[in-house]
Amino acid sequence: MFFYASKIAWMVAVPSTFLTLLALVGLMLMPWFRRLGLTLAALGAIGIAVAGLGPLGRVLMHELEQRFPQYEGKGPVTGVIVLGGAELTEITASRGQPSFNESAEREFALADLSRRYPQARLVFVGGSGQILGSTMQEAAVVRRALGQLGVDPARVTFETRSRNTAENARNARELLEPQPGERWLLVTSAFHMPRAVGCFRAAGFPVIAYPVDFRTTDRLSLGLFSSVSEGLDFVDRSVREWVGLAVYYWTGRTDAWFPAPRPESQP
Image (cartoon, rainbow, N blue to C red; front, side, top):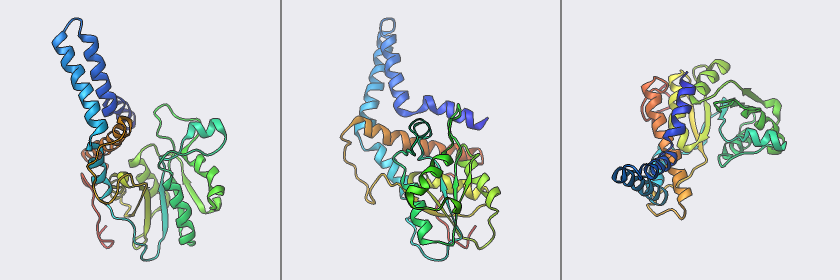
């Protein structure tokens, strides 16, 4: 129930969609309620301009990405867990070749870590996060791409039932049964790492963050975006994560509102 409710609610709550609907409703109301219509239309239009051109999205994104530092590569590694989310399942099914979005660094990290830690277990976690289902699972896309990445498919274990981050964590724990003292790297986009780590901790699976797919530099930039679409994309993605952090904590799916790094000795 949570999966469907969260997906449906976010379809309307996406900032770019909400602001556009606000402006359209305002325009539709103007013939009968001129002042109200003008107010709503102006709020929507101004909101789109401010969110699309201003630094808000970059500020929100930067705070998320700075939460967990890049992995320093010290100590043995038991296994590597890569979360799905970069796979374009419908395009892959239609075109017959593996297709990925701008988060494909997750797959690059899988290939790189497979060579750096040849004895480590490799695990890909991801089924389908689409509300109406999909003709192909995320894992199937990655399986097709492994040869191109130079990774032996026999080395990779696939978890194919997960639909969201909370299920990623719970299903991974059931599949892998981690033991005390093991060191598991968790690979996902940097802006998604706080929520992902929080879910794994809540599931009783301590992991070490391996953030990739950075969207901001290490120093915060307050410059304007060159296009409204780019700025809105930053706002949509970052607001989704901040809202997700709050909702997941409120519903007990993470162990903290804004999870932070911990010493490895602390579970």
